[in-house]
Image (cartoon, rainbow, N blue to C red; front, side):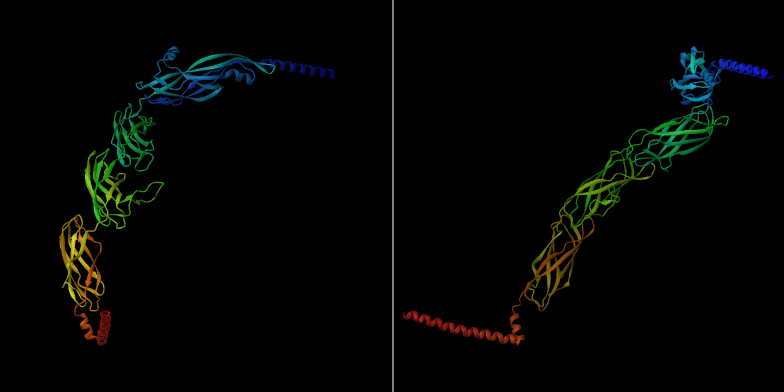
Length: 579
């Protein structure tokens, strides 16, 4: 019994080893080839529209002799694969009809294609603009290293391989669905001001676009929508093939925008004839902003004078590029704020006080100029010389919006201060001629227009302090031409206790200048002489007893001294004669 069991074990072991050896021998070699198909999930292309052809590869593999998994993977994989689309003669040589594609992607490496799906592999293509709608086969050429046999040799892999080329067709469709193009851009925009642009687009496809949404966006940062929206959408319910649609946009151009075509993009999403959602390729056009409006201001004639009101002229010239409408020249004597330097406007000259702040000039064509005049006052502490003023022009744009030109520095001349009047006491100054204490006299003053322009409605006013009192202190002169003189009269009362002396009076004038503006002159000082009365000493002696006694004593002493002096002189003379 034990012998039988022993024999059975030996036999079982022998058979097991033999089977294992046979199994190893059967699995150490694999034979096969890759078996690759290609397909494109999105195959609808539009003539003339650049698109991406995405190709997915499916390698089913063709295993003729199985082996270890690693060996089978070797023979079923397309190694180091490259792919390209064949066109022209290369496609014809492979039996494919002319493919109406312009292929923008050259041959590209895609690596190993193992069993299963790989990709997608993207190719940029442009169907020819006149391509007929229909289904086309596009040849995809794959070139790879094919391991046809792989054998295990004591842990190492022995390969039999060759380089193979395989052409695989992919079906694509060229459709007649809607596509769009810009056919006209009307309207102009200008740097610094908003404008309106009309963009006309045409459905150049053969299909109707329903429920279309046109999305517009300025690409160049120099352009923006007036609404500050980055993109604006417009709805078109039904857009027939060959039909035009015009879209209106309000656009701002930056102040510094240059005169060059700025990119403007339009995208159209719609539903095609089968109610499927579709998107057309992006349509681009250019919008060229005009340069910023230029208005030049230049100072001319000036009658400005220190401590007076005067006028200055400025020439205003429209340098384009557009005609000006409803133009108004503004004089605000402020320099605008400068970004990064000052936050608020600054007075260009605090010694200049504008009287007129704007002058209407109406319409001004490109290249035309006109002269405007402004009035301003110059403070009394200002220095004469050149002054820089600030002018700008406000106008209406083509859209009716208000806009203002860049301010200009205008240089004008300010003359030295001058006296409008020359004054002096008349000859004689008073009536009666000698004003004495207690008198009330007429005081006459000669007034001369010492300025350069006619003055009217001259009101003269005389002022005086004790011991003088002005009873009639005002006089009126209707007009005085330059260089003309006249005499004005006042009544002055001299106080009884006034001593003989020269006292000061002062006079000023309120008048209208040549422009009809009321002015106040400087104050002028005039002398007023008070003289001694001939009867004054006698009256004083009679009315003041102490003064009378003093006077008598003085006279007596004088007479007494005079007698003694006379006697002394006579004695001296006698002595001289005796010698």
